[in-house]
Amino acid sequence: MSNSYVLVVNSGSSSLKFAVIDSQSGDAIVSGLGECFGLSEAVISWKYQGEKTEETIDYPDNHHQHAVDRIVKLIESLGLNDNIIAIGHRVVHGGEKFTSTVRINEQVITEIEQLAELAPLHNLAHVKGIRAAVKAFPSLPQFVVFDTAFHQTMPKKAYRDAIPTELYDEYAIRRYGFHGTSHYYVSREAAKMLDKDVNDTNVISVHLGNGASVCAIRDGQSVDTSMGFTPQAGLMMGTRSGDIDPGIIEFLLKKGWTQEQVFDTLYKKSGFLGLSGLTSDARGVLEAMEQGNEDAKLAFEVFTYRVAKYIASYMIPLQRVDAIIFTGGIGENSLPIRREILNYLRVFGFVEDEAGNEAARFGNSGVIARSELHNAVAMVIPTNEELVIVRESVALLD
Ligand code: ADP
Image (cartoon, rainbow, N blue to C red):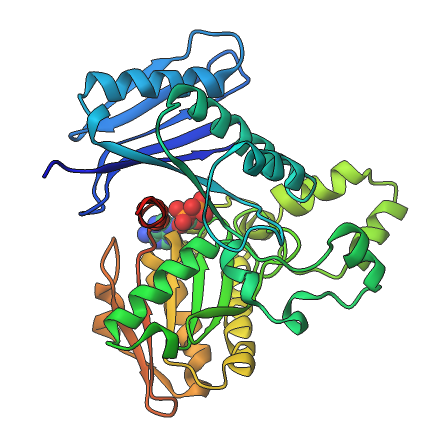
């Protein structure tokens, strides 16, 4: 039997990530990135058999379509066409409409477009990528996997904000949560590693990357998560503030700041970048801290303290926890950050497994702490959102 591959597309406003993935092994055959869309120097690059190639996109506009057209040619030239059985797209916002992966048709595209009110930058960019792919691969079945879908199982008490009900009824203002594909993936992997039925497994999934969120998963279902109406809520992140008192916004507006200045600051200049004054990148912050930089140390302390507080609060919806899972670039790699968070979790009986914590890096999973009190482990599991997109697409094909 010949190999079957899925083309995974993640289309952003100024970029488009893609990968052709073997649906059995999960290996990427070729993966790449189109970027600087909308600028004069739009480029597309890809990695195939360890070798990287980069080309400029020599068109003045419509870079999403030209990038996808280039991907079609690339796939042809590598002789992969006949093996591709489906295309899976990542979409950030599925609102309350989409609770699982769906096959793309015109109505689905229109609905994603309508949901752009909730995620203007993301959803419209996704639609550009989807339309380009539908045009370029008219005969292939295509699917959309939503970042919000996994959290649609949250109970009302978790997803409603304590603001007038009219705002929910009229504008659909509520907590949606994001990173659902990652939380879903690691919770399933954790159940496998613990040799438990996922429907009887309670985990706290801690995704720490440039964006960061925590999710309480009870019996395999999301019951609470730290991101809310937008991915700005919850934890401190690379450049995002996470939870702040909304009174700060009012205060700054009264001080004469424009709306743009306020939101630009909270979205793009806060978090690790804002507190350290140096960089949004956790590695850079840790390096500066090691060299004695006090601002970097504060950024580290605020970040780890807040993550630990969120984890502790999710003991309430779960009552019983089997595993705390660290994932995302920071969660998978940063020993000092995990160690500091685990120190706070001593209150729940967690004792660091130092050798385990040191070994679980750079793509390795493993147990990094144990709690006899809760009969639970803390573990690292590298996330793989693309693999979920591949599996969900193949499952719907069948
Ligand atoms: P995104 O949310 O954009 O997908 P990632 O999940 O790739 O981001 O995470 C990026 C973050 O992971 C950055 O802050 C980076 O510094 C951090 N990171 C990656 N490797 C390490 C490492 N070895 N130690 C500490 N942080 C790391």
